[in-house]
Length: 290
Ligand SMILES: O=C(O)CCC(=O)C(=O)O
Image (cartoon, rainbow, N blue to C red; front, top):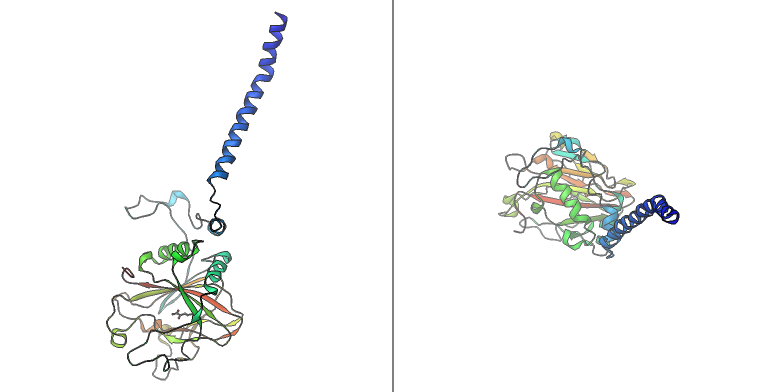
């Protein structure tokens, strides 16, 4: 009786804590085990996990509405500043992280070649020499195993409300000292370039580096200024946007009626000090390469 009494007392006093301890240990082992085994340890998965905060810009759920078939569950905030209405130019501070910019440069660096131009009727590579002196490469999101470009493309689609499949591949550009892009239009005037299957509506520039001096994106005809026959297309005047790593610049080349906006003329001023890296995404009014 005495022994049995002590045993049941021991069971009561010690048994419950041991049970709790054992179940906690099982719970912790299961919890951490599932984290370890569900991790994708391929080399490419590591940067993705570090670069992408998929909840970035997601707002309080209280702000959401029931959405349509093709809509999204979350409400996003992507801060922007209107830089100009003529042309419609919008600036996005901190659109990408420094790590994302670095990852894009890393992929592009070994693929650079002298930048080329779309030629108008009668023009040749020789006659247009000196207009665009940067080097660059085209990169599509499928070539980037870190998925940085995919992430940026999705964000651009949200910010512009132009579907992702309307975008051309990224044109990654590097400007060294003295290199520039004289003023030009991104959309193709059919009278100069011939019939077009689709047209570039807008351009999104993601600055991948800061530039110590020079290298601004310029809009010489902003608000109708300098639009006389004497404008020298090499001249760096008008609205100038200084590149800041991670920031984005969106401008529209077409007016809302589909005609080319004359004030969307733009170019890149020569780099005076430092180096400029930028990723250009041209967005079309129809699915690209369908
Ligand atoms: O480099 C820039 O700032 C402008 C680039 C540009 O004009 C273009 O890619 O069409």
